[in-house]
Length: 243
Ligand SMILES: [Zn+2]
Image (tube, rainbow, N blue to C red):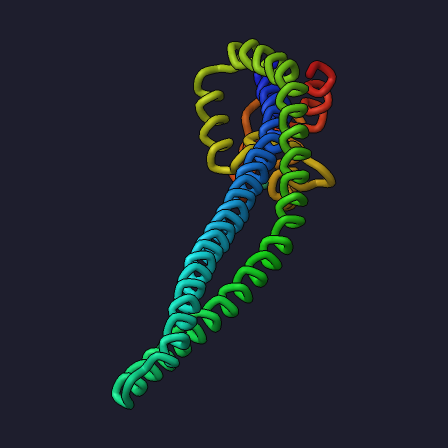
């Protein structure tokens, strides 16, 4: 019986270490993923602003060409003014001149606001870039940490897994089933010990009569509050010496 209890506690100790390793790794991949998402969204933001800038420049260039063409026409109309033969021709020509003037003004105004837009887009991009650099730096660090942890853990994890396999083989089938069931329900700890008269799993006081019985190490007891398997401190200490 003594050994049966000890081996259960050993299994718990091994699983505690495996849980710790998984916890270490569990956080970093998430952080890396989140950083990658943020970086991608900033990159997309910059790309869309660059595209808008390009389109604005294209439109400004085509407006410039149109303005030049209109100004040429304007010159032509103005020179024709000297050759008019009657009022009707004169009126028609001045109307053309006014209309062209308006068109030019409209295009120039449009170009002014397009230039303002380009300027503001450039400012926005310049504001995003340092944020992006900062995130990229952070990502690089996190990736390096993760790589290191995975590499460092590989050996330790393999060692623990092989230890676990050996110990698991020594645990009685029904005990293992109980262990796995409690471990799943309690998200980790299935076996607890007694610390300062309380269950180390749930910290509820174990009645002194029960503590006495547990100290006999002659049967399996469960904590009446959390349902974990309770072993004596003696068992826990002996198991720790081995693992
Ligand atoms: Zn308990």
